[in-house]
Length: 299
Ligand SMILES: Nc1ncnc2c1ncn2[C@@H]1O[C@H](COP(=O)(O)OP(=O)(O)OP(=O)(O)O)[C@@H](O)[C@H]1O
Ligand SMILES: [Mg+2]
Image (cartoon, rainbow, N blue to C red; front, side, top):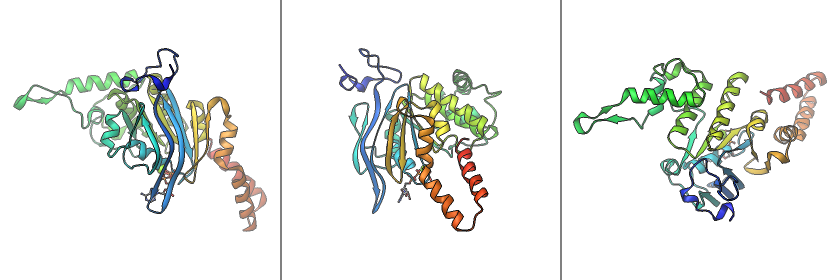
């Protein structure tokens, strides 16, 4: 029996095909494309997300990364190809449908209420209540306890869950969002550029929680333009450029240098240097520009 033949409807995050002990596709895309009127935003994208694995989606600005996750998260519908969730061909018509299918998305501009305590944000929209009818009230203590416990489980040590979430650093906020998705039973976790606005140290913290989520059996889709963030945590890499897939690799089939070269577009860098030179740039300054481009992509 192969992974495709087992009943994926009942598959929970963290499970593997019992016979082969291999991870199972929670989600897969086959030849997926999307056009907005005349504009083709995405063509022929094929990728898979397995439980306990991290699939990275890399690409420059306008490459189609957000379009891709919007399709998976139910904000937009694909116009070509198939999206398979737990073995079923699906087209989500709302984010709610995607969420109900176990797909949680953490957007870069996290929808948090800055002045509200961490625990309130953790339970926002899914508050716990106790009692019935007119006696129904929020179970504050329980929500605080669960928040504290869940954050600790992910290795996040907050001084106080009563703290307004706005006081946390960007990295910590991302981590709270990840812990929340895990707690509410996500099977697939989509992270849209979670490290884009973060420094090296904070990025490291977020990358660690990506691995925590993976180890808890989630299939993670990690979107980034930084190969140095993607490579250490990723199991698979999908490279997008101007809406097209320019490569889809297993980690064993690619090195960090190859990934960086594909991303940076070695030829394009040389072309840029040439163009700047024509415009009167100094040659040694141009070498600095090239060097800088390389180092910035390293953070
Ligand atoms: N709602 C829309 N209507 C028309 N065109 C769109 C729409 N959304 C995206 N596009 C186009 O689709 C292409 C891919 O955009 P997308 O936002 O997916 O890129 P991205 O990889 O997320 O870029 P970035 O790194 O800048 O966030 C772009 O050319 C964009 O202009
Ligand atoms: Mg985007």
